[in-house]
Length: 606
Image (cartoon, rainbow, N blue to C red):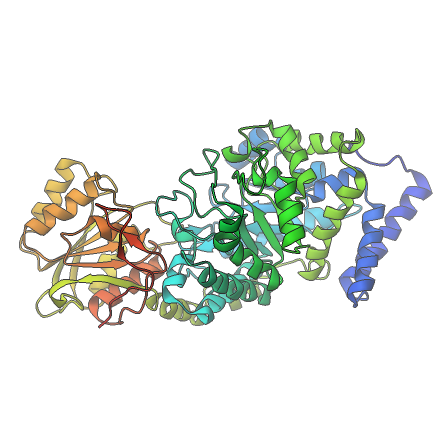
């Protein structure tokens, strides 16, 4: 089927055009355009020879189901047909000329490193086999900590707030370099990290531990370190979510947040990490589906705001790299306009990459029609295509887009990477309460330990739910530990069962997950403390839990429930490592949120 935007060339003219294009891409691949100015001229010539449909396609980054570009499982074929109108990634590329593909765990793209590399290679082969084939920019959300699409055997690293607690820019850079090297080995060249949001709102339901902390300058330093780590490993870093998602009480996946910061407040609180990212040469910036009236009073989300993206990001901050939307399937960008208008308005605002539209057919055809109808100038499209191609050239995709099994073996989940991740994690665990010097826990007096608490869904490739990982780690350190999952909202009978199980134990470890004043996790800790058995609370997500747990004898913040952070917490409990983390956010009193219980920089040690 002929593409709707294919120019009507035929015979020798068509063949000569394709031959010329092949020569251009060959020059990019072999590095004969060594100098930036010469390479840019070559890229502009490539853009000039592309059809309108090809240009439109280069701006889309789509999901696709399955672990194979040409032969996914039957269920994934059905999902592709239902959501994308095609059967495979190869068909997606053939029909829409997509310039990018994003991997998700739930789309079955990330089963194991070898299959990820094979999928990446299949996508590149499908695209490069086309008459005017271009490499695909493959991306994912591998922030680590609470957001990680790829689990073990890839190296799991501490997330942003844990690194903020560690306070070491060198550790942050090293973590990003390890993550970037492993992603590149699997054929993924763009990571939607680091998170540059400053988490100044403890009630933030979507950022929280994904942020490095509440201090803008400290966050800026961590963002700079991670940009250099990722991009030093040959992977495009992405600062998100511009202009700053740190002070919201609404999750933009499900609603439309409004940031009420004044322009001076934005300049002081939200802007510093993004300015730092731009200074560090960030390859891409992701937009936020939030309204910031002080920057644009129109009521449009930042993703669709020309004043914010072109005026502030490109103008005030001087950024000329790739701008990518957050997922266009999120509710925050769909509340005011239909899905067809969203894609067009994002490009008019200054976006270059349109990420994960709910219907690529609707969005792709809307952009095509907007250019043909004169609403979007083709020159505007060309500017974004050129930015995307520049990034692909910088990442080496024209010369070597493929992953290899040997590269996976040499890079992904190596012993050196795993050991470095474990040492970094140990430096992040934060001790907030230690009454009667309970910790480090003595194997002589507190050998028999019960581990209870929350077991949220864990990333793929873990050793099990958090309670089991903590119990296993403590057992490996010489304790006799058993696990009992009680969940994030334990019912009365579950609490009773945990209290009964605590009888006769030497200590109880409780994994807490976003405790609230009226929640039953608080009840669980209170009931366990009433037994007289020492209670050690480990906050496995937000450190704010400690404000609601006055009955605990000791409290630690682990900042996530991945194996590497849970094992680090266990080592701190057992005294195999000293607690070195310091709070990167303040913790307010539960009974008076206007007062600070523990300030930024607080943390005990022994």
